[in-house]
Image 1 (cartoon, helix red, strand yellow):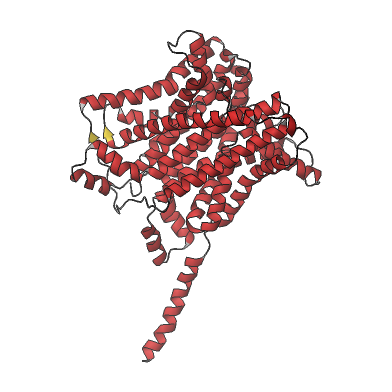
Image 2 (image 1 turned 90 degrees about the horizontal axis):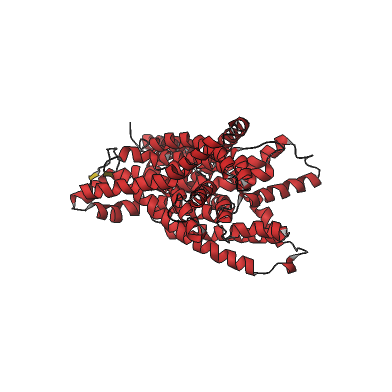
Length: 534
């Protein structure tokens, strides 16, 4: 009896720390709250000033907004569907099928991601004008082609990370039951990778909606081009802010739809031991078709336009003016991607544990991604102007301008980092997390030993997306950069806006080459980062 009475307090005392650890806040909650504030403030500023009464509202009709909305919807559906099909099919082929050239295609398929859409648009237009292309690339379908062939890596990277992390047990079980390659893809692999594919498709559609350069060059009326048209042609910045607010609301509605469509489904695999993924050996005809599909995606997405630009750059070399812009671009991309990845990772990790704060942070991150960079820059400038009027800051010098630019990058691209990380964490089995908690692992240990290793492929994909996106960003950089602080994107656009494609070829190619190295390294590493792999 005495032993029983002596043991009870000991058990109660030892279980108390475990209970307190289970109820402790997630270690990244504070950072996630800061990230939500960083991401939401520029967007809220845009909405606030859009709702404010404007003197010139009566001079702006609703026809431009109507036409821009219809044009954006049609372009997003056509290009988003094409990019999703191309990216998901390519990811499945290189991840779980065996055909000639598969190992090379694994990392080559991400090469189009390094080329901005406006660079591809100008390259194909130049090919058309020079008579080198048998089919004219122009108008709506020209823009749809450029977006689909240039943006499919969003879906490819997310889907490939999901396929590389899938349970070998589930795939082997399906094969043992007689599943053919297509059945394995449609009934096992595709449902398990649906969060990653949906994340990639969402990023693709948001990028299409927010793009300005390619749409403007092809003469398309979208919400992005309407913003600049209202701002410059109509001299009505308030109307531009109103159209920008429509973009923000559309982004929020899209995110709500995507999250509700995912529901409460669990997408984690059932394997507790790592083993190599089973690969299907394709027949001669199927293997040739897979080879041709992957080769065509690389050729049209990168090789053909970039070799054409290389030809122009050799003839019109201006390399002496590009050393400093190259350094500026790499420095901004590295710093901006590091800060934005930390914020995005905190948001995605917190969303799994602190549900309320996580939902708020996710929506805050998604608010600015569909809006053009110029709109986010306008919001940041408005906030800095209000702070200056309040006497909180002085003039906007170089250091403060660069801070505002990094802030705009974080607000603009946080969702680009959150989506792949969130899709990777969605595959984390609830049983694994619960087991770690029962065994006494605190929040930090669960984060470092469970969450991050399982989400490693998605973290790599997010880092890649952020670096290259910041490297290519143009409108926000044009507005917020300090005086005489040029980047490669600024140089390329300065020439391209004057239709001097030959002169813009060199900085455009440097953008491609600067983004190519991290793309190849991270892409090749995705297949090696399966949980449990040695």
